[in-house]
Length: 306
Ligand code: HMG
Ligand code: MG
Image (tube, rainbow, N blue to C red; front, side, top):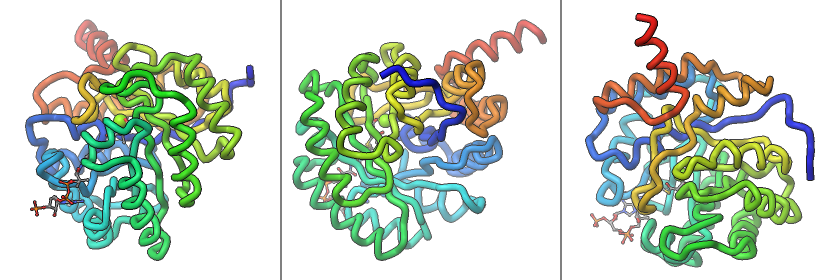
């Protein structure tokens, strides 16, 4: 399996949701909206704008309805909201959301900690959400977390990932994002899992979602591209982590991904410098610099030049 690299890739920006959900200090809604609008100005065509989950579980996402009300939505852009259950779907419908993400995991313990349900119970909730989504002509992304390593159970067998992935695909999700939730995967695992999943589903249904906790995210992207995947997730500034995945800090930074892809001549339609500007909106709101490597290097260079 040693294919050529593609001419272009489709990126999903997860900074405003996966990136921010773990932040302790509440980022003001106006700054979140400015962040999202700047990302769209940068050329992002699909992004996670928030989640309709319990505000007791994830307080940072409590203003998702307000975000959707305040956003000036651009035609052709997917503004995705995470929806765990019927109540979340009510929130999505009340706020004219047209693109949603449902989520479960390959690990039983992670699922329990993340959504207080077994995998089976989560699939029942998801089935109900997908049915309502279909009735309302919504686009549905499925997320499968802990596909390589679980913070509670350790290594996850590819056959277990396949088992849950098949259930989500059978429900007719429009896309399935395979998550390395705690940033522990290595490229050989990516190659193996993609080739296994590729036997069940067309590769254009798959996206890969890497965290960079152990510095393997870009290597994993290369392995994913070589295995034929054309959709990847990134988080502006490297913001992020899941509140129910200890040590999951640091999503793959969108800027790091763009820098590598640009260098390789792979198009995304996204302007790297404008993503830096978007990240700076959140850095200011949080009162600290963000961890993305390109961003850090860019800021160090700018301060040397000033
Ligand atoms: P629960 O406590 O089991 O739910 O939570 P419940 O049905 O027993 O209800 C308890 C209370 O929550 C009730 O309110 C419900 O109304 C309320 P009360 O009567 O106590 O006032 N409630 C809700 N409120 C708002 N929105 C809702 C909702 N549902 C119930 N949708 C629940 C179950 C799923 C709600 C909870 O566990 C939850 O919200 N979990 C969210 C977890 C989350 O957002 N995790 C992060 C996303 S996953 C991720 O980051 C990984 C990913 O990036 C990929 C990767 O990296 O692998 C996607
Ligand atoms: Mg994540």
